[in-house]
Amino acid sequence: MSTAESQDIEQATSAIGAPDSKTRRYDRQLRLWAASGQHALENSRILVLSSSATATAVLKNLVLPGIGHFTILDSAITTPADAGNNFFLSGLESVGKPRAQEAVQLLCELNESVEGEAVVKDISDLLQTEQGRAYVRSFSLVVAHNLRKDVLDGLSLLLWNDLSNPPLIVVRSAGFLAEFFIQFHEQCVAQPHTDETPPSLRITRPFPALLQWARELDFDKLDPTEHGHVPFVIILVRALDDWRKSHNGAPPSTSADKQAFKAAVREMRRKPDEENFDEAEAQAWRVWQEPAIPRDVEALFALSPLSSPGLAATLPSSKLTPETPNAAFHALLRTLDAFARSDRGPGCLPLSAALPDMRTDTESYVKLQTAYKEWAGIEKAHFKELLGEKFPDIAPLMTADQLDTFVKNAHHIRVLRGTRWGEWDTGAGTLATSLTTYACEAATATHLAFCALSTLLNDNPDGSNVTVESLKTEIRKLVGENVELPDEVDAAVGEIARAPTADMPNVAAFLGGLIAQEAIKVITNQYVPVKGYCVVDLVDSWTSIIGQ
Image (cartoon, rainbow, N blue to C red; front, side, top):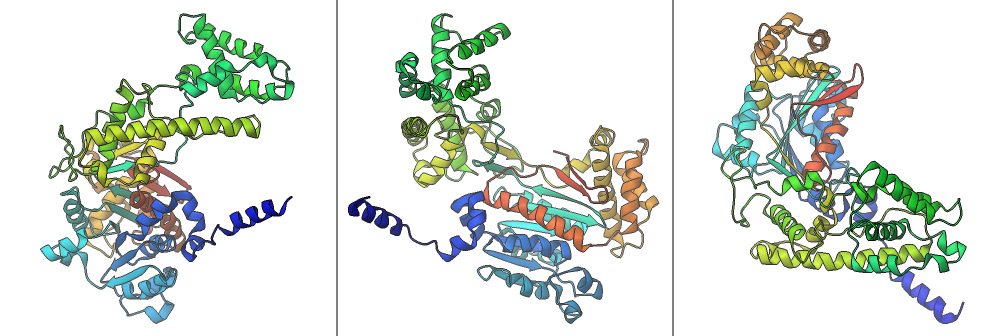
């Protein structure tokens, strides 16, 4: 190696600066939700209504990844029972002191960059004043654990009445059973991080450079090594191009056609051990199963944005404004519809530059990747042009990363519409049906047991009136007196009657990770959060989602 080459390499490597302290600290999670997700976390303000073992376990899993601020709002005084089950209290030293203040001290030690505050007040008092209600609405997310039913009803209604209010996570636990529910109006997810809908490789709609490569490649003149490393994408584009020439431009459609197409791919090989042709045959489904627009995405094109001040009503809107809830996402969504239908477009979603692994050599893979990236850039430019034409007031408010992320993930974007907490419980017929539906019986029984427990604890917070019979009586009020209760109800009410107010450390630790994970999804708008009631049974070790 020459001196010049050595200097170039040294200069190139030294130009890469060492990561800063934040990047080193959060290295693992940055691989999960990137800088945009971390930025959202660091700008979040979380209100937690309790300093119980479960509430502090949730906070532990939010403080460690670096939320910006948390407030524990709780008027409780630490008891010996609290000192025995909450790892974020200083044992007996905390007894007799405000539980929220004691918990904040230890939680803040987990991450010096996170601000923590304790407010020794009762949430019910805050909800009585406009100043208190405004304070609650000022947070990014509210988490409530085992809140009294009447207070929770008022809180959920307050946060549901305006689209700009923060989401609410309601957590209920007793003994080895628990459930949680996320109340949100709309969650627009441009980065779901799912593999359910793989990006199109444009085999059926090849862009010019791809089609040209496939047509001009002379398979007969390739040496054995080159022939065994032709990317499967090129093989399929060429095979489909040849097929269409002899079938009036139509792709394989019938079962016989598909088998014949696969046979044509097999005939292109020279040796029986050419793995790239095996891969092409295995990927042949892309020729007839790869839609121009995935059905789930196409359904979003007819979705109207939510309209304030309606609670969950959607009203047709001919024009989006910057004040529209999630205006940027809906502008991108409408532009995506226009792109797919544009005469200058490909008749499908924008090309993603992402390529799967494949049997080929480095040179061919890099060439293929370069071709995809270049054409993806051309289509992104067209998409950006359409966005500016359709939404001149909203487009300037978007960042380049926001646009790039949406276009890159256009094939599996998600829009979730939520419901108010407790709304599902108002329909006796719905609850009774779920109680007798296969695979939902146990989860519905546990949920109903928690509803019954909340009603009883609302009258007697000490749980002295909680018995198997009183729980069943409340459940019958919810589902109807004539509904026969299955055996799963007996199991659920038995566990809850045994420990109606128990907040167990091992259950709290499990719930802490589970709920914090969902909270991060909501805060970052990445990944797909749970919709409905997530029921947890740690007696038999299962979770289930109902009431979606």
